[in-house]
Image 1 (tube, rainbow, N blue to C red):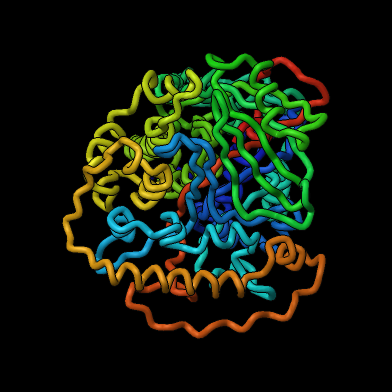
Image 2 (tube, rainbow, N blue to C red):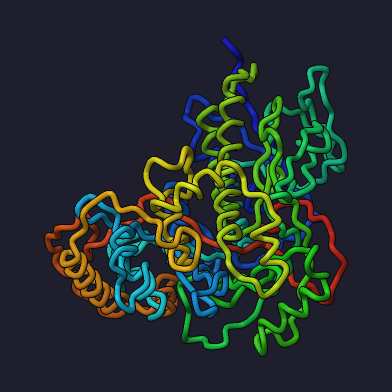
Length: 572
């Protein structure tokens, strides 16, 4: 019988390193527990810029035993109910379109997705999201997905949610939790990687504390891939033929209206990329992701600051190069790459933390002994490769189905970039039917409902792609659709009325103020449309997408691009 691994070494801190430690503590069974040592450079600054997450995060925090109150206070967190995409497409008149990709699941009416009814009958002056969930209503009213006085992690108003958070502070929160549970934290720099004759990492040479023997090492060293790429020479597979954006810049700005706190991430298309806006409790994180082939850094900075307007007065964005793609293998010999060292895709859908989490959950599932059985490693690499390709395809969708012609960037994004074969095949199918259950071979995050939300949000069936070619395959009852819409709108009004103001509820949750009188919970009424939540709408039971942002730093003056070393000082 192979000897078990007694110690796991994590190199690099930040979100990737500390989440890796947290999920090892959470996931390894008692019989497989190993000593965890996290080696973090004291010379890489921790950056606290807002970041958006996806709906798997509440589960992870809850399972880790982290109080939601502590989380919101420590990370200046806020709720995220979806993503508002502005100016990515134009309608038939040439006017910009705005749509929300929500964290709520679409319903089924007579075993048919409501999206099919929507494409057949429309919904009057309502858009697709308003026909199937409450997210837009809550966002417009700046409401929290809970009533005043609700319990931590509670979800009873029928609105799926994730969080916005300060990623630097989040790393510190996880660090505190992990060190209290026994993780050894070493502040030191790795100056050399010692390899054995079989190509495994034998030890790390640390600048201050000397030789550190290695059994299993997790590389969380950011874009530089100190171990996986530099020491082990694992090749990096670029996605540049599919995605043009290779630069980003970010700043922090104050809230223009302290009383108004939107529970949504905003992604606004600009001339050579897109700008994110993530509202935290205490400030806003914002930035610009763009293509250096279409904008110089100075041109991008000028465009971004013009987009911010008065809010950006005095802002000094810092440029960060992005390495877009993934390693051929995330697990090589006795090294597993997690976070930016494993790969990165532009933060349009806030996938970085999800990828860290899934990478660690799969590692726990296939956790090896010292013989490092190849079948375990091979299965892990298959899953991580599929996950990166899944995210790549979904990001590519936003560009492939764009119809802007006002700048060369948007023309090139649609016509010059390659569309992955896996996505191109599905796009041909979706000319005739909406995305369905059987279409996607792998979906760790983006399922068919998410694709429906983007296609219908972009109005692609009205403006060219697939226009007039959708087939129904079922007899649809217009009267039942009208009745359904009436019920959805009635329940939406009821839910919004019951929900607490977003900023007010966060102040309650943080302990900054006493809860107001709790609204009475409405009685759950029977519905003919399936098993919904408290207000008759489906809960977000599967993680769905989000958008940007990152852990990028606001500099005191514009600086030339610099390779960043650890995930706590990099794009996430």
